[in-house]
Image 1 (tube, each protein chain N blue to C red):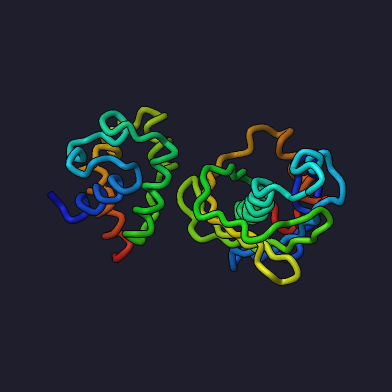
Image 2 (spheres, rainbow over the protein chains, first blue to last red):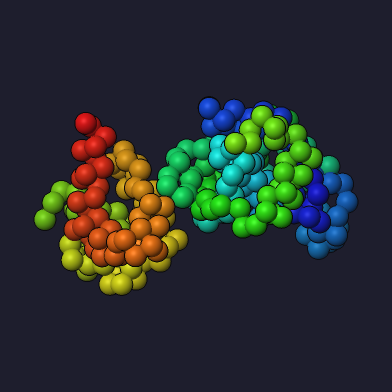
Length: 156
Length: 93
């Protein structure tokens, strides 16, 4: 997890475009300035950042489903739950799926688990738009390769 | 009033917290009901799931932007309901 870059996923470990599911690993860093504030002497992974882990997992799935041609931006969240505290050093497995693919938007579900136990879940809505620039596309492809998204297999 | 309009009006009332009585067939979703694009996504999602269709929002937006259609054609609710009926019929054809 590169918290300082807001890039939450270490790697995508499963990606099934036809089945509209993805699985990612997100390891909370042991140290970060975030934990100095959240909270002093009691470091906890903020729920807002757990939500971002889930959003990015579904987000990469949607990018893959578009053939790496479109960008989902988070537009809404429903039924987000943070069931238990997550600590620095915890490894999370996030499972994401696309529940509905609309025209220019999509809705997905995600669950995060630590050692098999669900720690967070949410339903997330996205607007889906073309990449804003060629530079964005290039940077996104580099990011994708860094987290094991099979760019060459997926790109259309 | 069509059954489709009634369902659409119920969806809008519930999604946007607009009194059901204020939602008329001649209401324009944007101009009269002041529904913004984000709330309209929630409405589109509910319509897609309720009717088992996919509202072609991207195509409609493109047509409006290109001057080939007016927003009235898609966002006045009786017109929207007719569009939904056409999509349902096309799905069953």
